[in-house]
Length: 197
Image (cartoon, rainbow, N blue to C red):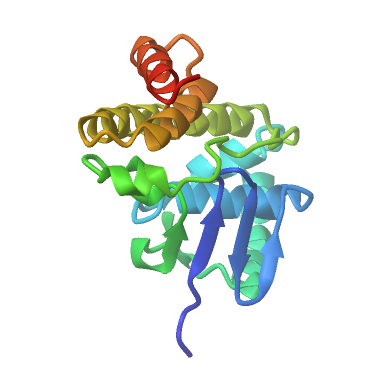
C-alpha cells in the first residue's frame, strides 16, 4: 500500500490533513506530534527526545510507553512515521508543507505574491507540555524569520518591476510579522504615494 502524503497547513491556519482526515489543535497530542514530525521531516528524531518533549512530567519508562501508543495512533491516522530502535522519522518526500516554498532560501517573489496569510500557526498554544510549547514558539519564530526575509526580497523585486500593488501587499504582510521593519515601512509609504494614496 502506498504511503499517504501529510499536508501540513500552518500559514493562516493550524491543520494537518492525511488520508481524508483533518487533524486540528483540539487533538492536542496527535496534532502536536504530527506537527513536530512535519517540522523535523527527514531528520531521525531520537525517541527519548520526543518522549521528554511531549511527556515531561512522566518517568522515562512511562513516557516511552505513551510515545509508542501515540505513534501507533499517528500511523492509524495516516501519518507514515518510521520507527527504529532509537529514532523516528517522517520522510521529507511524504510532507507537503505550505510553509516550505516561502521558507526556502532564494524563493522567487511570485511565491510571496500568492500568499493569502502570513500568521504562523495562528491560535495554536499547546498546554499539555511546557517544553513542547517552547519548541512551537521556536518553530514559529524560525518560519516567521525566513518568511520576513523572503518578503523583503519580494518587496525589492516588485519595486524594481514597478508592481506597486504587489509591493503594498507584501509590505503589509511583512509589517504584520515585524511592525518595525524599516524597509517594508519605507516601501509601503512609497507604494501608497505612487498609487495616489
